[in-house]
Amino acid sequence: MAPRRTCLKPAAFLLTLSLLIALTSAAGHGCCNRPPWLETFRRRSLLPVDIINLDSNDTSEFSADYGNIIKAAPSAVLHPSSPADIAELVRSAYNAPQPFKIAARGHGHSVRGQALAPGGVVVDMAALGDGGANDRINVRAAPDANSPPYVDAGGEQLWIDVLRETLKSGLAPRSWTDFLHLTVGGTLSNAGIGGQTYRFGPQIANVYELDVVTGKGEIMTCSREINSDLFYGALGGLGQFGVITRARIALERAPQRVRWLRLFYTDFGNFTRDQELLISMPAGGFDYVEGQALLGQKGVDNSSFFSSADVEKVAALAAQFDGLYMLEGGVYYDSSSSVDEKLEVLLKQLSFVPGLNFSNDVSYTDFLARVPELPDDGTLHPWLNLFLPKSRVRDFQIGVFKGIIKDTDPAALVLLYPMNKNKWDEGMSAAIPNEEVFYTVGLLRFATAENWKFLDGQNDEILRFCEEAGIEMKQYLPHYTTQEDWKKHFGDKWDRFAELKRKFDPKVLLSPGQHIFA
Image (cartoon, rainbow, N blue to C red; front, side, top):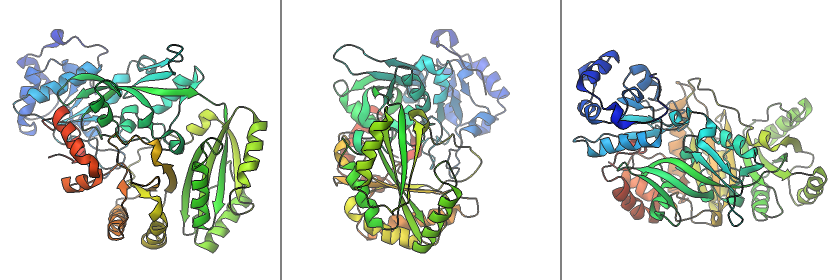
């Protein structure tokens, strides 16, 4: 990979044709391998020569994502040293005789090629943070007496690093994903959900301000009051209107510890009723609510939660009932006496299997960072994430858990937990079901080259089942290949979504891997 600069001085780096020829020759690309727009772009661009890479080793690195299902090489990779570099790239594409496609890639955890740019340019967002996390994460504990605390974080920053920086001031964001090795811009372009969403809404509902590089190459600051159409569009907008380079995120005082609970159920109705009860009392219930379906005879792995005897007990129950359901909860606290009293009252209201309730006491940091960095070991990830209306979750359980995937080893997590619609800002782009309570279902299955198509076929069968059963679900982290499907996905939001595309990315340059606009 070429070295990266820490500052941009456009006038000093105007490229000459002879330098271009030398660079492309050194990159090992014959002319027949370069798209026709590339020479024109490199000749006219004001970008430093050493932050645009054409080398096949570099483009290959940005040709796949965590899913390992879609492969598509870009023609070049931009390693920006500042948002101005990204803006210059987009302006070059916008003004080019042959506009080219651009995709911003954060930590590469999409699973269907959403951050790929076949034949175009991928922006390596991580390069923005090469100067160190502290340079692009700035905490304001108390801006003034009338303002709440916030953190300004670069779009390329990982949430784990945001957490570490904000905790130095005794503060933390309110809403989290389960996995923190994701970028701020990446999750905000989707929604960002987890066990706190029922109380505080998704991460997109906890943002005060954004800096966005639009599809015209403009750097725009936006909020609910300033350039509000871009602000609402970009949050959950799948990267269609611009590249998020900074987000101002709400903070609150961070607790010290978490009582982490796992409760087991043999009855699906008791499991969902208890989850819905807990999210209906945000002031006095759990601070974190999620759940899992342990299908077939899948039990639990040995961990700090379970003794060997507990593992055997859970496995025996799973075999007897052909599956279990596990409610996972967290109660934040500073004083252990207060949490003990609170849990004593709460647990009496729940209908888990007597004796199958387990708890662990961990620091707040360890709880939020409980999922370690995921290795890219070549495993394929045909994941499917859905939002289901509460009224149809039982139908889904019967048709899918007890039907389509009943005899399939899920080989990973099957998540299932509810959220409150009133915690989502419906003016934002993210699409959700039209019911006051809806569930997220995550089929996070790991596959090999031999069986991924079978599992992916099951995903298609699940989607057909929902359509034929009239379950008005929405895909989360959606993947569609036709605009008609995207129109159906966005529903009443589609016309506005298309209007914003015409306004902020009229030449359809950005995020081609989403396959929304031709």
